[in-house]
Length: 134
Image (cartoon, rainbow, N blue to C red; front, top):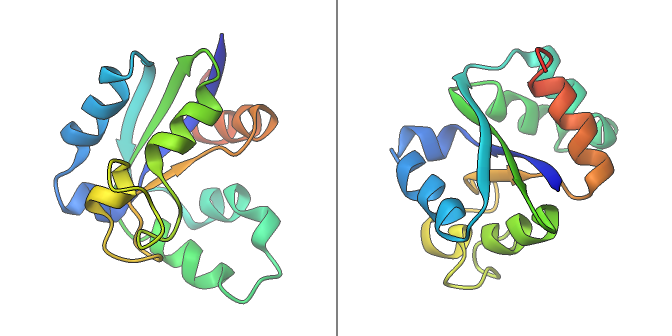
């Protein structure tokens, strides 16, 4: 069974979309095995996005994700990394399929509601960051 990290970003929390988004994952038959809401520290978000450290958008990305409440999830299922990324849709909502979370609800490329790990290896690294308690 594969695991992935999903983050419902501050725009999803502020717009009260948590229940609708969680329902989409559950309706697909995926299992949410951990969930917590909190305002992440800047240090946590910087560690999460370390691969973007030298990119011009890094500081804006960190400020955004650490600037509000986040709902962090661990989701399990067969091929869950690929499945969740398909459910989430393309990063740019203008390019996302209409049935995807971003296609339905995202307002911009910057505020695109959700993050999901891009590989099983990234998922394990990210899960350890966001759920250090195990």
